[in-house]
Length: 639
Image (cartoon, rainbow, N blue to C red):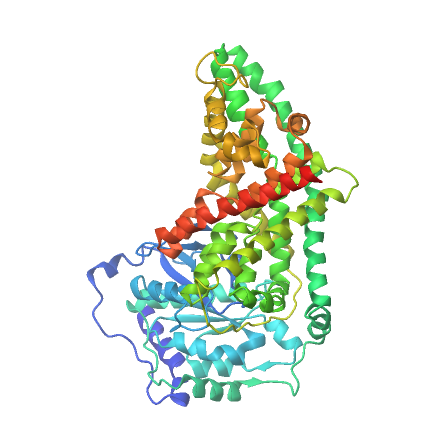
């Protein structure tokens, strides 16, 4: 009975195809392969697809509870986000895979190629397609393009509440019948229609298990543009003048070529002031907690166990000090990602890209590169991977050359710390110093673009979709901040622990060597590079910390705590006595511009597939860092 009901349901869904196409979708009649008997026991893979700005990420969090894993997908050499959806009544499990947002299934960008390879080499059991209801007319062609893949699919008509507010009328039932697909109006942000959407996915999954096939084949008519227009005329009613008045009023200011640019700079400066105002007290509180753990628990426990002095120093003054110093910056990392999520989800980021497109064109790039540069404030690695949306290889390489200069959150923690130590007054000075280095990061990108745009020419056109302004979902942005902070811990834990341990060993070996005496391995490294780094104000201790910062900026402050043999709470006072404010500015300049981390180098190699380009990027960042640090230090001495 289950099998007949499933097939009958499939025919009813397919009847609507006769209205637009001459042939019904039909069903596969092939005999199931031997491994089909195990299909019910295995997870059903549901691919989440949609165009950009459809609310796909919010829906993913709603369906998976925010529990995500980022890993290489079997059969592909790319990392994809995946998570578990609720199981159905038969106990069948579903794995939801979040694919990149794309505009066209036959496009040539790297993101579009990833989707194409995924669907070709690891075809999913189901497709869950997200459509922006407020822009449905422009997205019907892509929806029908997916319908031709012969993969069963459910359509989530997201932002339906927003479409109603704009006066857009959508006949959901008729549209579902015309397409021959289950189509449900939802609002992922407001949690409306989520349970019904899950039920629809389960019903289709049960139908697959009962029928033992992969679903119906789509129509073969290639004129999708005309079909989309016909479908829109039958099922969608648009107001005479589709205007979001609030968005239009805001854009008069934020998109103005002068006022908009000033507003952008003010927004960015406010971000850094807010980070310092909220993050610094939380950082101090966490630092005091770690100091208490060390004095009240860790050191007495090691003494009670009779640990040798060398082991005690290694564990407490090495591993613990390094790790705890880095851990004190977790509140700042959390706040940073929350603020970035607000900027992205509000719809402002694409407008900033549009506003800066003229400048980026002058540099041989376009507004997409600016968005990626801003996203690099979180982490340069995913920003470099995001260059896949740029089809032209020359522009992709130029963007990858500029992105590493973006002030990522790992370097941001160093700058907030140093600014608070050397420029504490007046109250707005630390935020202004950090904002200054933000501007310097863009200056470095401008210099790079002007120098290398002829080496990496491009003529690709730039098309940008401006979504309406939206109020971000509080739960979504908090979850994103929490998840990003945990990902930071997971991805850097080995670097932090191993780096802190290695630094302590370098500063305490060979046995009997006194730290700072010039006899330790760290002193040897510092002295080796001194002829090169003395002109920019680096002492041996700063040189060693820069050496480990090349591995990962996350361990740079931990390295300094170990080198100076002090805790996070006392590190500021110790460094304030060891170096001058001018040396601090030179150090911050070099940290900003030289290679962010080994992960960034690996991402450039992976995305460019060129060792020569990666070596060029590495050499150029080191050269530019040294030149500008020299200008800062020697110029400061002259003044």
